[in-house]
Length: 488
Image 1 (spheres, rainbow, N blue to C red):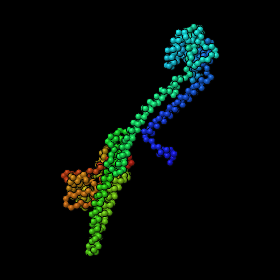
Image 2 (tube, rainbow, N blue to C red):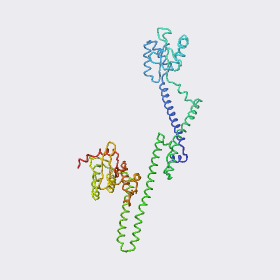
Image 3 (cartoon, helix red, strand yellow):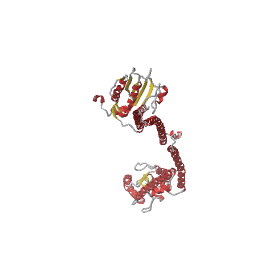
Image 4 (cartoon, rainbow, N blue to C red):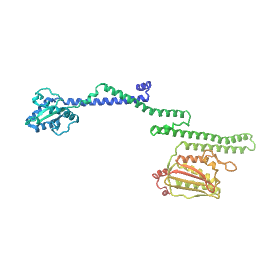
């Protein structure tokens, strides 16, 4: 464990303090970097003023004006504007018109109009006879306006030169003062409740999700998140809805498993009892010994078939089908051809007209086994005088396979349970053959392909079973299958 991990383990921070400290560390870093950059730019501008003297610039401007008049002063000002990048020099008349026609900064214009121009008009600024013109070599400040007299006229031709090396007003708020302290306290008072509200907004739903997860892990499969949390439109609401869907799926799987285990135990009890009785009779070694061995063999085969079909049903619920491109029409045609042999033995017929090739993306073995289970069940119970009808059709949304027999049908009360594991319809005298897994296996295989299977009693008699598969699976197969009908 690294030292940082050890520190975090010794001093765990709640989410509120993590958000709070992160916010203020980020703010401090931004302010510190901003101050450093501003100071660097300011010092660069200060350094750029090295070698420039306001007194020397004033003398140069006056000499240019005295020697060459207004044109010479304009040329000098343009040269200074292009070379002294860290210094702005403005020369204005008493109407605040700048010599080069440049707009004055708003703060500088306000200062001129409110203070300097009234002093200028009152004769308190810039007139040589008043003693306001500095002598050569005198110390001049960057902030003092300097009068420039043009030759050939008195006061009307006098201009005022101003220097603007940098703006220092923004630096005053950076000093530690009661204002800065009050601002920091105000920022703390605002950020702390905001961080608390943000943390509560996240940790509250997270705590409820954690409690639901612990209850689910403890075995309470009926656990769901609070409805108010599941109705949220943000990511936490999506997580709650996903949790509810997961819990519902787990509950259905566990209920199905428990029901399956009870059914398996019930179905195994009868053949095991018959095996035990046959063994007791075989131990007598009388004339029925061979008969008992035959019965033991049949019961063993029945148990083996029951275990195999139960494992097949479990695999269909646990493993996704391995899909490949098939022709659904050809698959049904092969199954119908095989079923016709069994139907011929009972004197029945199957009415089937193969449509055009229908490319489909599916596990051919699993889907074919499902269709075969339903079709053989229809052949077994149909009236020999009424043929079994098989119809395959497709539209833009789904592929439908209808199998209708001519048998007695099933009781209406038994229809909802027809595809449940180990359910067998007792319609009339005697007991139905089989373990009641064929239709369950078919339903599981079809559901694994995203489809549904339903059953209803047909008129005037018989059972109609419809397999409905989503059309998008067929569309995906059409991109990879070349017209399978053309290959035959």
